[in-house]
Length: 369
Image 1 (cartoon, rainbow, N blue to C red):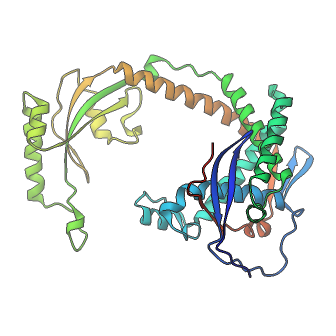
Image 2: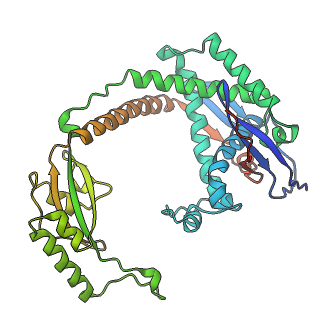
Image 3: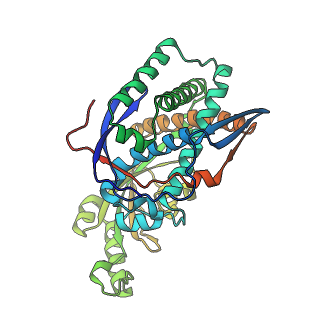
């Protein structure tokens, strides 16, 4: 068993340049029991349409630890040192984010994501020639330069803890480069046409009288508002709905106000942020018209005013978003087609031995560009 509190500088790379510096800090002791895996052990066995291939423990461990470091520099500052051992639900409780309810630890979840990324990188490299993608001499030189920079910029301790070798770094950057080039090529050739009807956005202003009480002031944590209080809020909402000046009355009644844009071609039930009853009411309004009071269970009373049935600016932004989604969908469709002919088999025992024990934190004053 060995422990250390020393901080070692380790640098991120992005193909041909160093983009940030972080410090690698050992904050926990790692006990080694039994036989440690060999760098040449096979963690991922690949059957590429009859062609056998593999990814070794040494390489896979480096990719996992390197990606862990990238996550650590963002999450550790507010998640705490036990972050990787927590479930997503536990982490969300401590950071006030929404919970996914997953029983997986953050380490398991991250490793699953990294595993999927490694599969995608492998698939892209294997099929690159089919879409006319190859690495140029400049790409290869940039990769070699970045790998050497990564190795020379870090101490022996940091290199050991992240599991890096110059070969692993070069392989990783090569896979990354192939993936990004294949993605760019497929997306550039995708049909990303978006019609005005698909993208049209209507924008309304809403006044909300929330029926959620302040549970922080209640010892029991009960957030249920009384029927009497709800009736008072509904009366306020009715005043806004009947007023000649929507904005003035909403302000006078201290409503929560904001604007919201929605896609007119979508079913109200498909809107991810606004309740379908509110969207359905908006669909019946013309510019300047105000709705009746809309009661949304467990939310409150809405009154809305249609501002623009065709919001040109919002529609333009939605067109860009939908076009991007279509390009991404085309890329994912082709990748999934290729993946059907490749089988990846994970050695779960070796995979479990890759642990996110040594944590990476941002080096104060050491960031470089």
